[in-house]
Length: 332
Image (cartoon, rainbow, N blue to C red):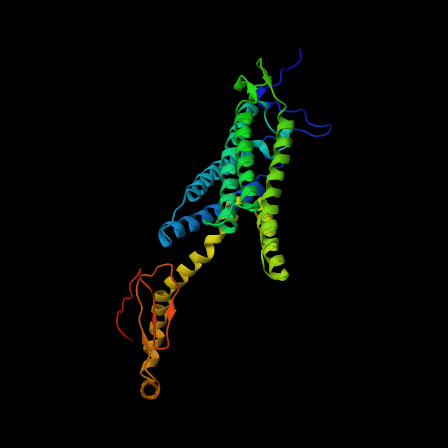
């Protein structure tokens, strides 16, 4: 009588000839998946955090797309976390190195992974479209071809990702057949659905690239500046595909955040240099007295807070604007 194989030792797929299943330490791409996944999630979190801080604290001008960006970030973090976990339990291995009893759990999480993707990516694409509208179609201008093109992109994005959500949610009837193929029911062709979804997603990405290029090309500016701006948008869309759409959408707020933090560094750098100033003050006292008597006086006014306005510099003083008022904390 032949020995019956232990179900826990059965692989999800018979291995090729000459190869044995390895369940304990199989070849896997999990290390790469973990590194890339954590890097992308960290970049997206940093980008959205900078944008949210800039809009909420510095500019105090939160708009609806800023909340959409936060929603998309939460979705992407959940999506990335599930993908990393799936990689750890077998998604990045060969099928003959996965135990058959683990497949229902993996298939269930794969479906959850697919269901989370459309709302997160749809929100991110909508966020990008709104950013393009605010750049190329400011309020008060006539609704031209660029405005209508972006409206079409927004509508197509909404319809496509809503369709994807329900397609992945109900790809099998009953749903349990998604992770348990042995029960009775019917399913759509998942491979065809994924391929068609990828094709439509590519077309939407091309639209997000072509519309700003078209808008820039019709601007009245020198050709070299047009080409430079087009290159920036092209690289931005490519980066969006590689490292996350959210990062690209948040980039317009980075300069404002940098200007804010650059001013905040002033007090810290002053404290760091105080020790060296005090140590050399006694040695240079005579030279300092000579300089004060020969040079015109210069008043420096520094405030602890400032608004979005740039620093104002005049021949006799330096001021930082605080709200709508000018405050003086004494002369130096």
